[in-house]
Length: 167
Figure 1 (cartoon, rainbow, N blue to C red):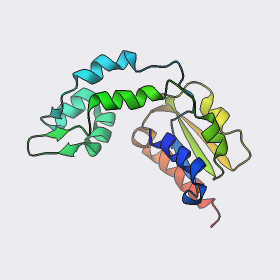
Figure 2: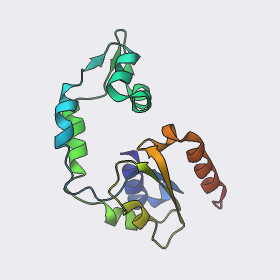
Figure 3: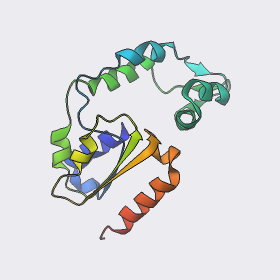
């Protein structure tokens, strides 16, 4: 979600964005719905009793990611916002595409695609075909959270990309 929001910002307010790193996100999820995930999402507790419960629900990689994003309370770990709102936001992705916003981005970009991620096949590669400096990297053995599943690969790619930018 952060990658999509960042390139929409870069398209709308280019003076605020000097470069983009897009991790496993594509512009077109039309026809893909949250339907298969909704029963699981709706069954999530409002508050988890422990970090271990978060890891059990989301797995060790995504669990760490979500744990960092949850609110720590006196009694456990609380989700930000209501699950119904999360579903509503995610469902929006399946109703339209964001190619126009991507095409409007003028800043250099690094596209990092997970081999076992969420993006529809071929879209991130197609995103790299533009008239502005764009690097593309596919990380075959990583899932959606490439920065957690292949941190050294991710770091090398981002450092190399940033080092190549001109001030």
